[in-house]
Image (cartoon, rainbow, N blue to C red; front, side):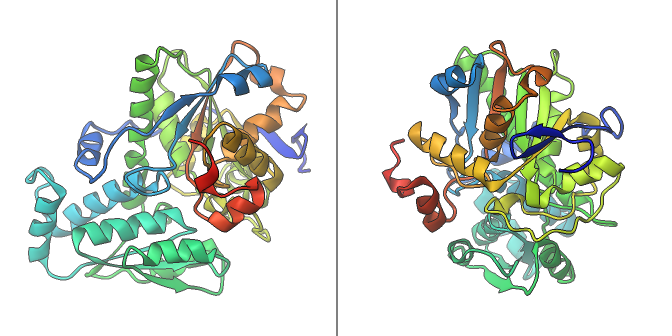
Amino acid sequence: MRKGSLSVSSGQLRKNPQLGSGATIDPPSEAVARFHRTLPGYAHTPLVDLTLVASDLGLGRVVVKVESNRLQLPSFKMLGASWATFRALVEHTGLDPEGWDTLDEFSEELSSHGPLNLAAATDGNHGRAIARMARLLGLDARIWVPYDMAQARIDAIESEGAEVIVIDGYYDDAIEESAAAASDTTLVISDTSWDGYEDVPGWVIDGYSTIFAEVDTQLVEQNLGVPTHVITPMGVGALGAATVAHYDAKDPRPTIIGVEPSEAACVQAALDVGKVITIESEFRTSMVGLNCGTASLIAFPALAHGLDWTIAIDDDWAERAMRLYADQGIVSGESGAATMGALLAVTDGPNRTELGLDDDAEVLLIITEGATDPHNYERIVGKSPQDVDT
């Protein structure tokens, strides 16, 4: 246990020592949501009220935004990947961002600018989303992945027509190799940022805003209260930054809690010292979508400004959450279940009162992915994703 941490069973829970510093990200314009509505299969993803779970945990309400089938892909990543790809292509070609009505029309205009390729690094879902956008736009894509990527995730990326390059290294190493591919004809679409590369990951963050715009609408439609707590997954921090951007100006403002694996708590480490650092770790976690060693430079100021707490959890908590969700008829992968895992950890520990997690608390969780590794899902849950009643 690191110095200054609070014991929450096997979790590491800490107040954000940087809270109020940095700067939040301005919420994006309505253009993001308009663009998403042009994508094939766009629809609101479900917002589920888990009344039995809330009762069992002694909470007022637990609602879950289920991103396990977003735009015909098993994760939320298509929202950021699609908007960032579109903006990057507009900037690169000089095309009119509003001079088309359908994605096919945009693709046709794009074809006159010669062959273009997309490149990205991924631990699974972002790369598949980039590959899907390339396929929709008639472009080629190359995706770099770490050596320990599950074959099912590689197969899924290749099914979109992309070339997958497996490297002898971790996710951060894949980022370095993909970044080196940038050229006049290859656009790198990364969801993390580094010195000199900030626009594209900023657009990725903007793309995730659609999740929370939908939540606001659905809470009203379903006659549910506004959240007092929002638990959001970290990874490099892009979704966390989008969470802060949406909720920071709300009145009342919810408590925002960021969750990451104990083996890859790069945001927690950065907040400890007040700057982005690269952590040393074995990076052995089943929450592969959050298995990152370095927080995004562009996301970090927002995280420093608006995350109230961070919690780093072991895989056991995420796996408990996967089984709980299955009992509720919801399929969630390992990374997707992290937010429920964090909620289980803190409500099981001594610090729930300090967090205000009582019978008046209304908690919003984000499930960021479905069963992207079906074999591991069945090992953990004891049944296949197809056998979970939805």
